[in-house]
Amino acid sequence: MAFALSDLQLSSAAFSYHGDIPPKHSGEADDVSPQLEWQGVPEGTQSFAVICHDPDAPLVQHGQYGFVHWVVYNLPASVTSLEENTRQGTRGKNDFGNLGYGGPMPPEKHGKHHYYFWVLALDCQTSLPEGLALPGLLEAIEPNLLGMNRLIGTYQRD
Image (cartoon, rainbow, N blue to C red; front, side, top):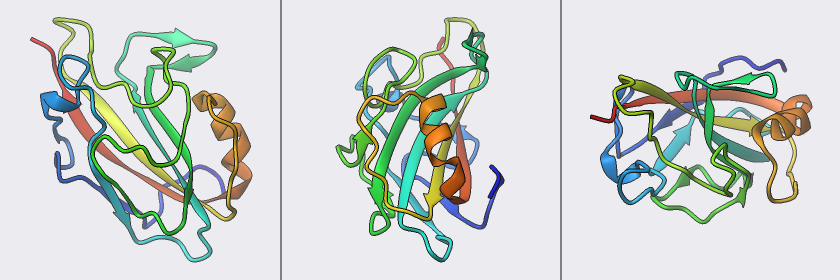
């Protein structure tokens, strides 16, 4: 399957679709990942990956646009939610250069940014090594993608 939206649904108790992401999940405060949950899992799903990307960031790196805040993968099919500040899954490298979650923190006076939290359903169990950046993860999982969808939240620094 090509990268296309599916019936998979992603939600969070922390913010609504296009709602404001609470400061505790930002780089300005506690910098903890928000709670996420998904349903409408495609038949045959064996594992999941979750990413968070800010396409509004004024950066272009290695042919990629925006800024990657979170990459987590090797989540078994039995996992259909992540608690706040989760330690589940294998941590990938974000664009801060760190492993795991790095919360929203757009440049000051840059306006409201949109943060796309994606869940990707895969038709195989994965055991990918820790530290993959988004391009490496997508290259590894694309042939096994069954479905995906996103939850968009917003954040703005004063």
